[in-house]
Length: 171
Image 1 (cartoon, rainbow, N blue to C red):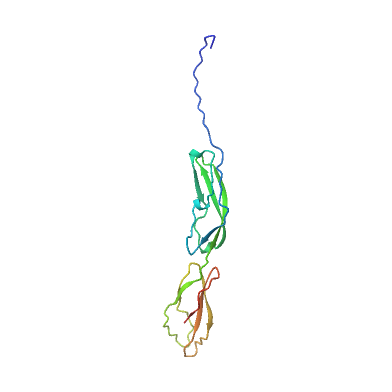
Image 2: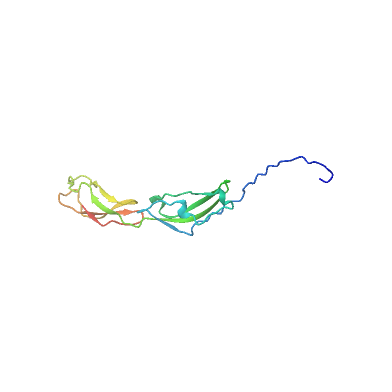
């Protein structure tokens, strides 16, 4: 200074800490997932411009649920989590509607030449089917009398968990 005093050099370490959460933005939705096609979604499918105040640090995106099965039919709330480079987070949600819009197809009889012994309880020999959300096999009609020899007709259908039905199949 003007009086000739000399100052000691001092160093200071300044840590800048990011404590601001990123901003999570999900699509308005709903998102539709058809179990007869693509059965999963990605964070990019849900993200709609999420951001962070420190762009150079980047953000990572994750979902709490991304794969869907027949157990998920209907509306599902999925959470998008956005995490910045300082581990600050924010979340947003979207509704994912899981559907099965196809009726059961390719229903065929197993052991279609089956001959049932008279007087024995009838046990169905089985059906094969192309259905991702199988629920049950229903008997539509039957004139079967297990105590009387003869030729009988049993008509079935396959029903899925969405209520879709196959074309009738006859044994």
